[in-house]
Image 1 (cartoon, rainbow, N blue to C red):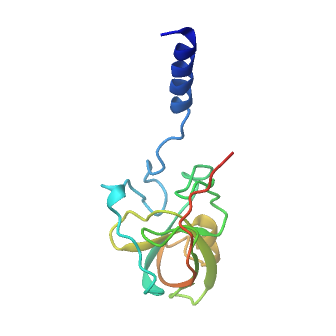
Image 2 (image 1 turned 60 degrees about the vertical axis):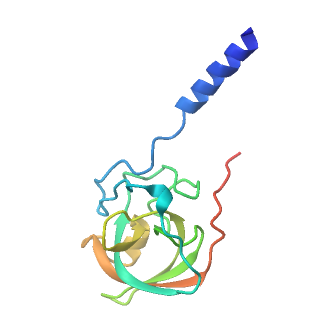
Image 3 (image 1 turned 30 degrees about the vertical axis):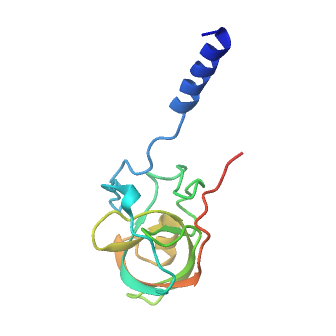
Length: 155
């Protein structure tokens, strides 16, 4: 091998080692997010169902500044959410059934990975929906606009 091939291999190894850590490595947040057993076998959503109800949790500081499933940097104070199957970048209205407060969010991540939960809101969304103290709440999710399921490319 010539010197250029050695340099190229070293460059690839260095670039690979600088990749971000896996997204779901902590369970310290209120949402107790965990690694899915087989993330490639997630069920895909159909566009026929537009209203869902179930339990929502939230996640925050342990993931703040890390990459989300759609490639953007997670902002715990933003108005975003994680859903297992809705296409990324889907716009939803989330209503806290306990108090009637509602909010428009964008799906930019995957989760929650706790059985029985259907949504993982950002801390900012949970604060506006007023369920930070409880950690979880019952919600109604209404799809406003289906997302393109695109991963954001960073240049």
